[in-house]
Structure formats: C-alpha cells, structure tokens
Amino acid sequence: MGCRITTFDIVSGRRLARSHTMKTKVVTLVYYHPMARFFCAIEDAWKQLDPNVEFLHLAVFPSAWAYFRLHGRATKALSWRAFLERAKDRSTDPDVISALIRFHSSDPGMTDSQRDALDRHARKMLDVSRSVIEQFDPDVAILSGDTRLPAEVLMRTLADSRATTWFFEQGPYRTTLLDREGVNANCSFRTALADLPATGPELVVPGQRPRWNNRLYSMVDKLVVAQSRLTGLLPPDLRPYRLEKCPSARYKALVRQSDTVSDRRKTLLLAMQVPEDANNIYHNPLQLSDAGLIEFVMSGIPPDWKVVVREHPLYRRKYSAAFYALVERLERIELSGRSLPEDIARTCITVTVNSLTGLDAFAAGHRVIVLGESFYDHLNGILPARTPAELGHLIEHPTDRSNPAPNMLLGALVDRYFFPGHFTDVDLGYTRGIAARVIESLRVETR
Figure 1 (cartoon, one colour):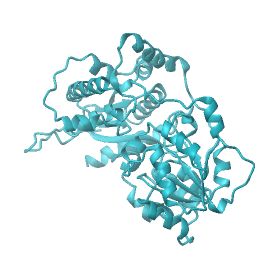
Figure 2 (spheres, one colour):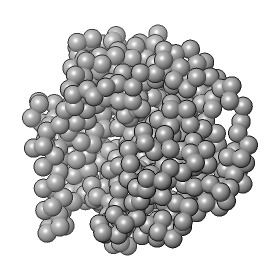
Figure 3 (tube, one colour):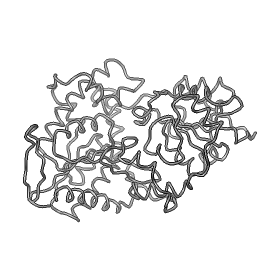
Figure 4 (cartoon, helix red, strand yellow):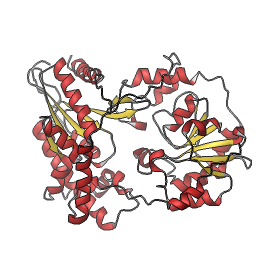
C-alpha cells in the first residue's frame, strides 16, 4: 500500500496520512460467531489482494471470540475486557453516556441497578476502546452496525483517530451493506434514492441458499448467559432483552384465521417492528410503542377500513400486554397467523414504521406508508406520514400510480448499493468484492 508517511493536523495533533510501506491495519467489531466467520473471510480475501495487512477483531459475544481464537486470528474480547476493567473514567459527560447506552437502556425489563451497572460499563468500555485504538493505530475500521454500546463507543473513539470507518449490516433480499456513513436510516445514499432511476436489473428474490451455523458456538453464548443467573458475571451489554410472552391459550384465541374474506380494497396491513430492534429505537421519530402504533393507525384510517396486524415472525407472543389488549378490544383488528404472501394478498396498503416488510409489500404492488425513517423511505412510491390525518389522507386519496415498476426500482437499489450475499451464506466468495472496495478506497485517498 506504499510507505507510511505521517503528518499532523496542527490544531488537533491528529495523524492524517496513512502508511505506504508498513502494514495496513484493520480493526473490526464483531458480535456473533456467524459474523466472525464472515470477517475471517474478509481478512482472507484482503490478504489475497494485498498480503501487507494486519487485522484485529474486537469480539462482543464469547462465540465470536472463540471462533476467532480457534481459527488463529488476532482478537480481543471487548465487552469482557471492559467488564473486568477497573473503573477510571469519571470525566465523561452523563449525557454522552446516556447516548452511548441508549439501545440497551431501552429494555423495558431493566432495573435501576442494572441501568447503573450499564452506565459504569460504558465508562469502562470507553477506557478500553481508547487504549486498544491508540495501541493498534488502525487505518481502517469496519463496525457491525452503528447503535449498540460497543459500536457507539468505538465510533466515538475512532473519531479522534485517523482511521477510515465503514459500517456493515445485512441488507434486503440476503444482501450485505457496507457504507461510510452508517446503516439503516443513517446510510449515505438514503436521500439519493429519490432520484434513483428504475433501470433495473429487475429484482430477483434469491432462493434458499445454504446457510452456515454451528450450534456448539451458539451453546457457548447460551451457557455464558445461563451461568450469569447464578454468578452475576455478565457484561451488561450482553444481557438479553426481557420480553414477556403472551400466554399461549390467550394468544391462540386472538389469532383469528377467519375464512370470511374482507374487502381487500379496504383492508390495511400493519407491519409491526421488532421490539428490540435498533430501527424501532433510533429511527422511530414519533416514538410509537407497539400499542401506540396501533392507536395511531386506528385514529387515522377511515371508519369502514379494517387492519390486519402482522407481528415479526420471530417475535410472535412477545409484544406488550397493552398491544394484545388492544387487539382483543378493537373489532376492526385481526391479529395475523398467516404467511406474509397471504397477508399481502388480502390487503392493499401496508403501513409500518420502517420494517423491511414494507419493501416486500412494495415489490408486490402495495402502496406503502412509512411512519418513521429507513434507508428506503425516499424511494419513488414510498409514502411518508407523520400524523394520523396525513395517514388518513394518503389512504383516501391515492397518489398518481404512474410510478416506476417496483421490481425495476428495487432491482436498481440492490444492484447499486448492496453486495450480493449474506454473512450467513455457506459460500462467502462475495467478500472478495468487499475487501476490494475498501482497498480501492484507501488507494484513492492516498493519491
């Protein structure tokens, strides 16, 4: 990559230029073992293109650390190092700490003592990350996501370094996003999608590609969480969300699978958010809870419309008691137990805060109304609403239907901004393209 010539910003003293003879240094932030395998593939692909590189993988969950260690990679257990560190940081503003822990502190089951422990943990993680970044001195950082505590801390630490930061996230239709600005609604191309031409190629939803997983690594994480119930030894950022389950008998009674066909022209699909998802916490400007989302929609739709409420398939029975109470009380609501294609076929409009179900419905020809922020909310044909009145107006007064073909528009989106592969694929050959993009960006910056 050339020789290392370091210059300094006169005001800040920050190093600005990169190495041109010494090794390029890459630090990554990795959560689970499938991601660890993915980042090992990136490291291997990078070394094939440019062997003069050194990786350091910062692991959050034990399964990722174990995978890296067993595969001979340089790794540090970031969350555990912070957990075992003695507290030193006393100067960081409490508002900064609150911002760092925003994702984890949104857990409705968190106690005051757990929140205090999370606050202390964030301060210690700042100390540890500063030390790691100063010692390793990376040229490049690739972070998984941009919200949880480890990512928030590293973003803050890396801002004072010379490293170029990239953000990784899984994309729609089993793709991968790598972006310089962030993921989800923070991505760099969000507003540019308003001018995206529907030039294709036509969207092709991939078939079921073989997926990789290893239950032994998964068991490591489960055992670590289980032992913490006895010992209390667990980094606060690894603590699972506590979501109460709706009793099975009550839930079955709520899921009405009536054979009576409603008028799909006056039936709306409400796609619920994942309760613990960053999109629901960070990109939900109306701060709608699950019950609040139902109330918002019901107050905006015409009185002769019905609503099919669709939970995320992995979180059925895991929404709030207030959510299920509304479903039970409101006659115009049906809690779906059907497949997504069935739900789309029996409705004509999809409303969501920012769920990817909105994209699936858009591809199927639905009008899609988003109440929050997402990477796709500026696409031609996606309709924003911020008040019940706006929602009602969009429902009763359909916009011009001369929008471009959704499948051509979504095909262009995927082709232009995402890599064709998913981090859980058995075949990770596409990671060569990821490595090549980052390497090329470094070469461009050093010209």
